[in-house]
Image 1 (cartoon, rainbow, N blue to C red):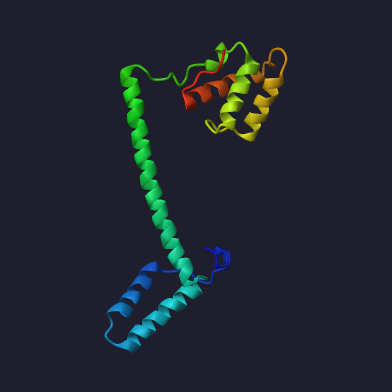
Image 2: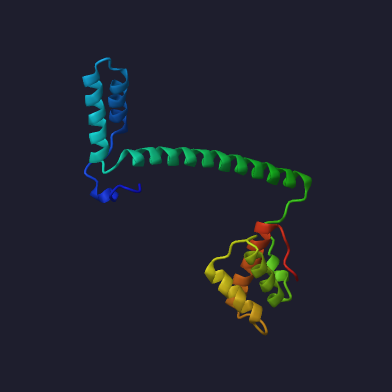
Length: 168
């Protein structure tokens, strides 16, 4: 929360149930003094928790945004699962565990292909993976025995993520 101190310096934890009851009293009381006292108590609770009212409202808005995002992501997961199931039924599914990297004969060209996909943001590579592929793109001769499995695994994962085949 923007205006509040870090959670380790907060004097009190905000009891939302109690705050809701107090605000309910403020809204339902026919006595102005009682309603004012309830609002003052609610304000004190907010301040003792190291917050201001804007923080409290911002947190509620962030929660609502997170809920909406979660619903959208769940719908996307369901859509993608249906697509995967359809591909499996039709026989057009990509073999995810196919060892694509083992069939590559031009490692330099395949490394440049993967880096192009990364630059186009079609696949995400860690900095270490991108550095490794940059090295492979300039490499002359065969990779070292310890490098070959990593290269093969990268190509297999990129193929599984994109559905594209590297140049062989």
